[in-house]
Length: 442
Image: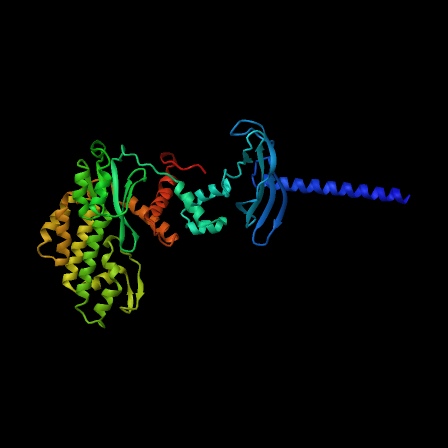
């Protein structure tokens, strides 16, 4: 009776252990399905919570293949040293797969081979999923150190992935409308950028803004291709004018409207400061001109009619009434303000004849600060006319430059120009139009 009981208990224990192992294996298989590990040859044997990260232990094994060298039959030999494969974050913890790969040995030539899996490339340690995630994060303008920390890999691994992105320049194509500008690479170092006005694709990013650098780049395009360019938008950087005409003889140069208005606005501001400094620093005139400088710069048609209490004047006033008080301090300020507003009005309304007639009429009697700006407008009259008549500007490229500043700020600056250039092209060209450039296989 006691022997039967002992035997019966042993049987129950065996059944219990069997069901436990079966349930445990089902749970581990559920984990592989959840992590999208689709290779059926990978068997997960254990899972561990290491506190700082999670670990899965398993092995890779399958039927011995043919020998890649002599085509003879290979046989199972032993397991390779455990590979540590970083995987995507799970439940807020970094995940590490410790995988033992089966080795095979040829019966005829003795060649050794290691089992392969789609989970990780041959002779690689980082999983394919992590490589794909690196590429995605590079497109999203994240700093390389941040990407490395987030995926629990080294910065060098992120750099290698960055270097896999390939960009090919088509030297037989240029857009009809192109935008030129420059941006700061690092302190005291400016770089040149050219962009397609319509598609927003970056055409060129050059390490420098010298005429030789720009000329040498665009001369690589055949003359027939360069002749197709009809419009180039740019800011008021005079060295670009002659260079653009040499490289693109059929192109019209369009000055950016924002920079034209900015020139006028700065001239008005400098005249205000000059007049303001003629008053005593403690006087109401000086303090008012300094406090309400924006009202003088603002378009008079956009001044608010709302009345507020103004401590400076100890009364309730509208912006228009404050402006009138400011102009009453100096007749010279009033004359230049009226000229500034008239020029602004004609420019915004695209009245080119009135705009230039007013300049020619007033240029001899205005303040030397205004004279300099007006002479510049007359000197570049054809380009200013193009800005007023054609629907093109540098606004889109200025938006691109703002994105470049974000990339640089996120990375806390770049030392290597090529890395900076690739990050810009990845963020702009690949994100907007992936089909035109070659992205390496993940």
